Length: 197
Image (cartoon, rainbow, N blue to C red):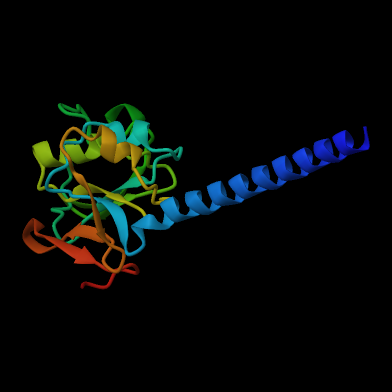
């Protein structure tokens, strides 16, 4: 009878040790998978993006880690901004019914007649791409989407990349994590902190 209790104890001890080993191995595996990008991060190529709206709905984060970015050196500072105003707007003012952005993340500031500056409030931006599509259709394309790495968790398999119909998501070197539009709309890698590569 004594040997049977020892067997049970041994069985439980072995079982608990095995469970602990599996849990530690799983945690280590998850950490390895999360860090497998290592020297690369996910980024959105603005030349391939079709503004499908999936960045806002497919990201594991709410709101999305994808945000609208404004290339000020490309912008025309137009009074009638295709990324800010609804198409066929009746009045060129900041009234909610005249704004294209569903969450009012674009702020319009008068500079001088007839110029206005447009800035993105990233805390409000959901990455839907509505403004980007408007800017590309009726403007010069100074608005575009980018993955913000201060928010992105760099998933091993990005949910947005899987859902992207244009295959616009790709891994880029972490040293140059942004593909920003510059002069004449050309894209260029930018290092974290805004320095041109």
